[in-house]
Length: 405
Image (cartoon, rainbow, N blue to C red; front, top):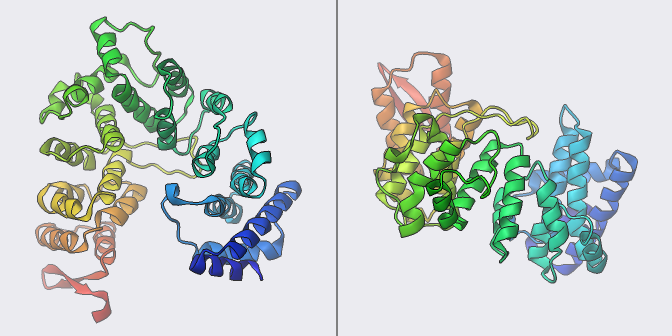
């Protein structure tokens, strides 16, 4: 049995024999790569074929083999790239090794994790269960400056009973993390978990013994976020005019990000207030580029956050929101203002109800004058995303099925 045949058999049958073969082969070849600084060429060619066929599933549904595969694919992608970032390649190789080791030698894996914890280990312990190494995990969180999955950290917080420990880790992460949107998510969790403490903090005029904020987040911004969310935190209902509680228009970025994060954390019933958050978010063009995340280009995190939330809602709710809110209208109004990365991501997500999107696209084509080739390319991408082509018919643009052409 070779690697690609074992992979195809595993995908079809999920059988133990092919799973075991893959785990041992991947483990052996990752170790070779780490020790020698380059992969075995035969293995690389076979694994590239696997990576082309692999369809990524929801992260929290992956088993140990699939988790190792996903990390190894990241390492191979960086290795195949123009800029071979050795540090990143080794990071993903070591991450890929851990779930495989947990399958092969679970006791050895557990002993290692008592002293050396990494981010992927949160997910591994979710899978294998047993006694969790809290001390090493918390040391990792207190000393990290980059977290790939901030929601995994929040999931871990929910397993802790000691509020002082949570606050201590939260403060360390707020100070140490390099990616600003992750800090906004942590601010949202702070509001969700400790609303009484936060309220007391502001009523007592910023008692800084409560928590130290990073230099990128001002206390007035924090207060705007709290005031906007206050009724939701204490009564479970977001006020319709939440935006009137924003103390300074420049605070809208943190307020929208915090409210969207609270929505993600709490999964509330969607009301007109939340639709207002989504509508303001899809057209909020705050542009951010992290120096920490490799290869990340300038993008607009808030519209992307809105689109991701909608994409994971129930299909009937998606349809209701996209049909009756202003989200699609605002998307087309900002069509040329989105960065390329944000536009591409939005297009993947916002076309999820293709007939609703098509109806709005037809309407927008009739009312918009396309001035340049670059503008036309954006409209064309919109049409292609639903398997259509834009054709000029006299003075108007119409949609045609790609198959017809």
